[in-house]
Image (cartoon, rainbow, N blue to C red):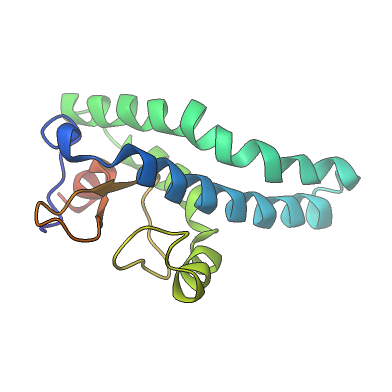
Length: 148
């Protein structure tokens, strides 16, 4: 499939179960990284490990709606708004190396045909490849916005 993904156009081909599964796993690993970071550098103490639980949910409750709003503002021509989406994408992408390793050893847990080692997108949508095979990963519209 091409990297041209539109949420509204391709909404019907999104595999929601796989999309949620991939992003929860990705968020879990990002939560571990941010917990260790907060424990080590922000000196939050044991309370920092709450990020392991909060981060996967944070992706769906905060990041996904915010990315939609940022995309809409970018379409309106608001300057530098894409930098905010880049920041949010990085917050999730820190979990990608561990998700990549999990995909290599247990591909049934990360239902994507090809998972990148580091994917700078806030939310990864898994779409049906229309050929009855394994769903393919498509980047969200933020990557499209940053390239253009």
